[in-house]
Every structure is written in C-alpha cells, then in structure tokens.
Amino acid sequence: MGDYRKLWSDLKMDLEKHDVLCSVLPELYSNVYLSQENRPDGMNYFNFVVSEVHGLRIEELDNHKKQGGKVLGTFCVYVPDEVILAANAIGVGLCGGSQFWIEDGEKVLPRNLCPLIKAFVGAKISATCPYFQSCDMLVGETTCDGKKKAWEILNDYVPVHVMELPQKKREKNIEDWKLEIKDFINVVEELTGNKITFENLMNAVKICNNKRQALKRLYNLRKNMPSPISGLDSLLISQIAFYDDPLRFTQKVNELCDELEGKIKSLKPNNKKRIMITGTPMAIPNWKMHSIIESLNAEIVVEETCTGTRYFENFVREDAQNIEELIDNIARRYMGVNCSCFTPNTGRVEDITKYAKEYNVDGVIYYNLSFCQTYSIEYKKVEDALRKENIPLLFVETDYSEEDSGQIKTRVEAFLEMI
Amino acid sequence: MIEKNYILFPSYNHGLALESLLKQNKIQYIISPTPRQLSVCCGISIMYNKKDEDLIKKLIDENKIDILGFYTLER
Image: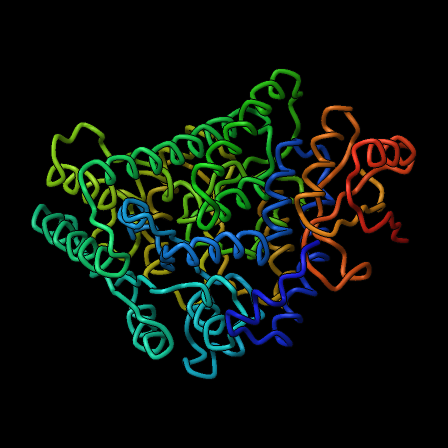
C-alpha cells in the first residue's frame, strides 16, 4: 500500500478532507463488490484499479506530466478521446458519482440540480479529487443546461474548453460537429505542442475502436442465460473505462472475456429476472441501483446509458484516406450516440426495444438522476414504445444519497414479483 | 466466500508480484482495497484463506517479496 500523500500534496489537494473520502471506499467496495459470490478471477484487475484509484493511476498521470505530457478531463461520451490520444495526451473521465462532493457543489450551485453536476463541481472546488487536480484542461460540452452553466464556474479554477454539441441530427448538424472537432484539434495541439496528423489520429481511432470492441464482447457475453458476470461488475468495468490506460484496459477486458467464454459452458439456468437499466449515467462510485437490484432475485444484463452501451456502440470507420475523411468518420460515429439532449431522439427508443430482445430482458428499469429533465421527459416516449412491445417498465428517480434506498428496494421487489 | 485475512504490502508492485505467484500455484485470493482498520494508507492488499497461509508464507520467503504483514479482521 503506497503512500501517496506527497503526490497529493503536490497536487494541492485538501489532504484532511480527502482522507475522509479515502476512509469510506474500502468498506463500501468490500460490502458492494467483494461480497458477491462466484466472481470471475479476471475481476481482480478491476479490484486492483479501484484499490489504487487515487494512487497508481494518479502516479501514472504525474509521470506523464513530468515528461511534458498533458492531461485533459472530460465529462461526456461525446468528447472524442481519439483527438486527445492522437496528441499523446491522456484523457480522464471526471463525472462525479459520490454523495461526498454534493455539499461542496451546493456551495456554488443551486440545490435543485442533478447530483452528477453538483458532485463534479464539488470535487473540484473542494480539491479532493486527484484526477481533477491533475488536469491541465477540462473539456465540457453542451449536453444539458446545468453542465453548460457549470463550465463557467469551473473555468474560474481550471481552463475549460467547451464543445458545442448540436441538438439535432441533420446533415448540417453533423457538419457543425465536424467543425467543433476541428476546433478541438486546434486547442489540443496548442495545449500539447503536438501536431495531430492522419497517422497518429488513425492510430488513436484504432485504440479506441479496440476498446469499444472489448466492451462489446463483454456485453455480448451478458446475452447468455444466465449472464456469466453480474451487472455490478460490468458497471464497474464501464466506469473504469473512462480513466484507465486504454491499451491495458482493453487487454484486461479481453482476458476477462476469455475466462467468461470458458465459464458460460458450465453455467446452469437460474431463476433470476433479467433486467435492463436505461437512463442517466452512473459515475464511479455510484453503484446504488445495481446493488439494490442485484441484492434481489435479479441480474442486470445491459445498461442503455453513457456508462453502458452508449459508450462503446458504433465504431469509427477506419477506411479514411486522409485526415479530413477521418474527422468526418469520427464526427459521424459520435453523432450516432443517442442522448436525450437531441430532439427528436427516436434512435434511443429504437435502441432500447432492440436491446430488450437481444438481451432477452424480463423488464426495464428507467434510472433517472434527480433534476435531469431531458431524460425524465423522454420517459414518456420510452414508456409508449415498451408498452407496445409488452415489456414491463419501472421509473426510478433518485440521487446519490442512501435515504431512499429502502423505498427503492421495495418498489423494485414489487416490480420483480409482477414481471 | 473468501475469509477476511489480508496481506499488506509496502507498495502495489510487491502485491502484484505475489498475485502472479498465487495464480501460478492456483491459490485462491482476492485483490482488495486495504481495510481502514489495518492501515490509513490506501492501496491494495490481498485477501486469502487461512488454510493457505503456510504455503503463501513459503512463497513469500522463497521469492523475497516485501510485505508489511498478515492480518485477520474479525467479522
């Protein structure tokens, strides 16, 4: 167990407050994760990453910076990692999933805002997240009004570049997004001093596609009845995807999939209900819904969320002949992600009904972070579509606090009995 | 379910070195965040079953792996 206090101190962290955060994780993780029965051996790598979440990876970022490299923090699956990687920079996902940061977030933000935004702003202003402290620049986007305005506040602490994500999916919007990606390339080149070329961008596209392929392989294994891996473990892997080294991560996910492929042959059917989660993202360490659902007679087999299928579905086409074509392919891949910030967003409803069949789900739980308007409004469209298909649906709106856990458990229990 | 016995290390690479030995020798283990009751430093520890303790100690001696010690938590 390394002593990282000097590193944290150099990052100008509030060590005393950070220590409170560190004291919670081992027990939380042990209760939620290590208490699961029959976990795959391959999960040890992810146990390792969580154990070293504020240690080893931060040390890696520090070494990268000592060699002149830059670190960029991102908050959304629309920010193209390919651009960051191509410039030999490291991208880390910074969405906050802990109640710990809410209080600090509320010092500068209204209380009636989604917990994800309050948590990531709280993490920065309280100087208790070493990832935030390692970032040379944050990359925001315009996926909701709350985030849009939060960037202005964060910009007082660290430089923020905001990408303007279009709100419709017409051809002219894709052209706009291409221009945003080109602007982003200029910003990243200026920050890093590294030129983004066709070759290094193509190499980055391949790294990201391989990572997507590994996650897709994992999700495909979950289609097996029963799934060879819990929803909790799959969620953790998705969460770690946002900040781990992409090459190492891809290798470890593939090794895990090799193990799971061997395991499925000996699995016997269980009587657990197969559940899809759809809705808002679950940033680490937000394991609340999964741990409630999987403590009952159910297994989560797919997440149609940003910490699920939206992160890895659709690949960037690798058939480009020059950088212009490659940027076009990147723009089209990202514009193919179906977030409720778009209008209309029929693609998401189609995805949900398609996954319901592919993963053979018994029911869908619509997970909505409090005050996330676009997702809560879009519920109606999802409800209508699933009713036509006779797929049971439960809406749960919640935040990071544990106060409503008992109530949610009762509702999920009733839902499982009904389906 | 694995028992709550832990091996603590001065740094993660010693833990990973032991992990690969445990894997080679097919000894059951789980990598875990170090429980707060055992140390205030964060980082990895390895959980193991008491029945394997002598064998693990032998592997540690033979391969000169630095550890901080063996600990058991009461439930």
